[in-house]
Length: 87
Image (cartoon, rainbow, N blue to C red):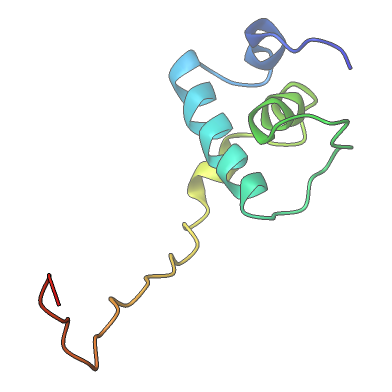
């Protein structure tokens, strides 16, 4: 596994701010189960995202994609009263 550097990624991205946005979005997608364009090679999602950017597989177009819907967990309801303490 080769070390990935910011300089490797900057060849495919206009500026550092965009690199951060692209890498964060892609890492979040990978962590949530999106298919990868490269082998994982025991990398974390953030490293794999940077490797994909450096390889040209992921670019600024990812920022135009809509965010996937977020699952909202409903609060638990209590059907029975909570007993007082000390009983």
